[in-house]
Amino acid sequence: MKTSQTVADTLHYLADLGWEDLYRTPPGGGPAVAADPAAQAGADDEPPAAAAAAGPGLDELAARAETCTRCRLADTRQKVVFGTGDPRARLLLVGEGPGAEEDRRGLPFVGRAGELLNKILAAIGLRREDVYIANVVKCRPPGNREPQPDEVAACRSYLEAQIDTIRPEVLVCLGRVAAQTLLGSDAPIGRTRGQWFKVRGVATMVTYHPAALLRNEALKRPTWEDMQQVRDRLRETAESR
Ligand code: URA
Image (cartoon, rainbow, N blue to C red; front, top):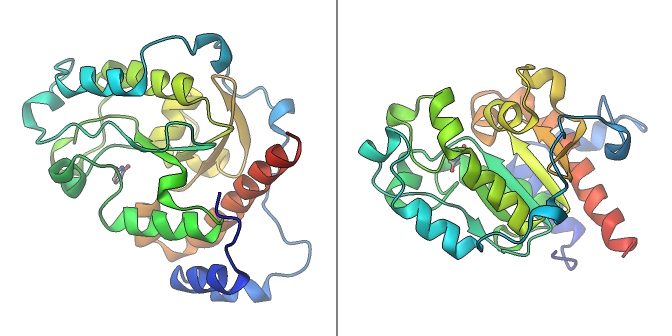
């Protein structure tokens, strides 16, 4: 965590994001739902991450994914985009799947949505290299279409192994596909965003995908509210250690 982040820096990033009007937020104006993760049933029927950490390490998983042919996305990908960041990160972010630039470079969130994600992270005092970033599917769906259910199912064990291996304190689902996949729910994102769930034993926040923010400015404020909850939760867990 970048503790030396100055208020001025943060405001600068927020202004970049179009969040200048934060100053006009009325006192007490906060997220619509600020649920306690411990009190949320969520979709966590699975064992806590701590019980499952003995599998292959991230490097071994990435090597396996490199030659994966479990689904049709293997036929059209240029590069497998396994994930990147600090393997001991306290925060894990999960997007949908690689786009064109990610497919070309083999890294998640390096296009326009990635630039915005970097700013969002900076706004809560984090650098990209402090966190771990992964996707639901590790190969690009052609034409940036949504990953199909069988593709998500084929890739699922990689994501679950990433969660269990990294064992972050907080997980953030970026967008509907990540939320529905990890919560095991078909609820629209408008119903789950801003709320805490537990996924594989990890406190999990749902928020909008950065690409959605690029299309719809009005989603920036709720996303900021959600990410403030993430920031606060990380602070709380740091203080209680
Ligand atoms: N969108 C995603 O969901 N993931 C990426 O890696 C890039 C864009």
